[in-house]
Length: 472
Image 1: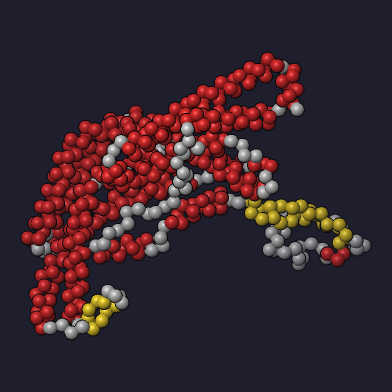
Image 2 (image 1 turned 90 degrees about the vertical axis):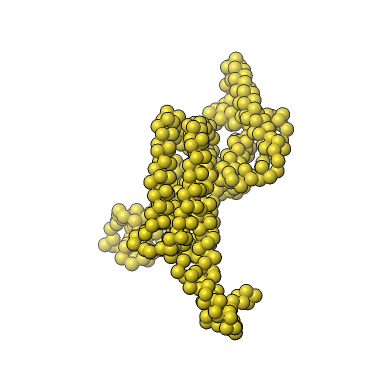
């Protein structure tokens, strides 16, 4: 009624406001439709413009980047649906309406915070791009020369006083040094492109948020350290084969054989020739094991360090996505919106006995679990007037955030440490990712451009109409 009266009193102002709303909705809908067209065209180009094996290979290599880009694109393209007012206040279930509203605002707040962090880090990277490029080159040169090469030469000698097999150490050391040299030569040609890569990361952070360049950094770091991963895989394969061969020969001496069908050790009668051949193989394998183990431990430490950095960045990305920023803001502004239980605080209590007097209870009697009994107040049988106030306990900031973070780390296996330790000891493949949770992937939107433009315009107009009604 108020908006209608104001429009009747000031028709020109109402027309100008209506025209401004229509113009703003037209401009924003057109810009969003252009972004939508670009994203759809880029997706179609990747699907049909290249060979299927190239697309699948790039998806596997840039798996983290591909996943985070898809999540961010869906969040951006779905903004008209989340902006529309679904009339949550008129729904019968208030709890569902509250959760739906918090979910919608949490997604938008997460996107805003992500973009703000991306702008903060991206602008810093743009301003100091040359310094960062120089630091990366110096750091890579130090790691290659002072750590990898020196470590391989040290292992080829007498590391920590251990006498190793000279021939095997020389072979493993030369293979490692040749792989490092080949990769250093390739890095020399790629080094001139690092500054452009840093600027690309900065621009991605400014436009799409900090999670996209962070995910791309994980994939690029995996590619840059490919020579370390290859050497670790090669030496781990040799180490695991030695361990398995020694275990099989040890079972031969004990007269036991592994039954793969029943997964148990069964008794088995070996011949004399088999025992002789086993003895001849067991001795050199056991004597060569320290040499292989030293190289395996060295490259395992480097590979574990690289995997740890990737896991830390992966955890940071998941925490940025999962943190409910809107709940934190509401907790700081209106903490009473997060109750955790109710209890009664007795204010006054009067007794009808002759010697009674009014008792003022300045403190509270605690939550209902403590009970309203004992000597906290006069006998309830003699009381005629009891004045109490309903109070509520409030959640702490940790209790508000804990369910969201539990959901993030719920996908982590409880035996992750045991699996990693078993993989290190036996030379098996260790997990390179922690498996933390990310926001659920929404289905890819594929609607006609005109329909998407109308959807954006109607969402903006409905949002502005609701805002004017609230002001009225």
